[in-house]
Length: 239
Image 1: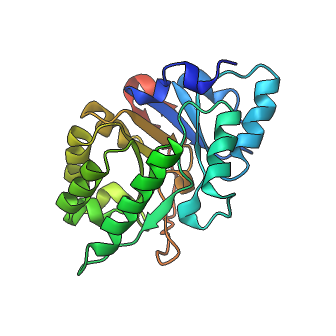
Image 2: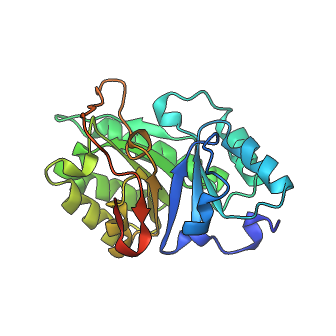
Image 3: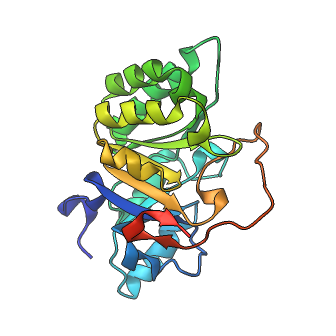
């Protein structure tokens, strides 16, 4: 295995990955259909190291899900564990930016703090944000990310479909067009639109819980009925 620091990152240019938990039965085989894998949770690096020992060589990103309250090692140890597992790029554990209609200060401070840590550890920022930030205050998010000047992996949060929030698609398009080295993780195939407009990577979940993030204050909506389960890449859609 070539160390990630010694080769160009596959996910730093227009690319797509599946977003999977380390226990997913298709973890090893699913990479045949995409450019990389994004593995979620604390156990991701250990599982990929185990697969590496058996010859697995696919590019992998790790979403520690720190924004969801996942108990992780300190940031320095988490970044080191990713490096030891041959991560395509390194990411911070992840933080959550809840919606604030009245004040932008907490969001701005959060991004500033993550930017500083990102530079110190040479790892990308991982920020889960309530989708209303990009839908209603995209200018604020855009300014903060441009000032940070760091590679950013963005996870959108909503009780249902983040991109169904009015203004979210237009906001995401603006971010993709303007913010360098932007990745969209834990999304549905709508994230491919961000790549078309300039984002470098889209990571798509294979079930509803891995296609968006719902914070504790959000009650995820479950609708009855059939749900598409097969993604046909040439058609860029679920069937």
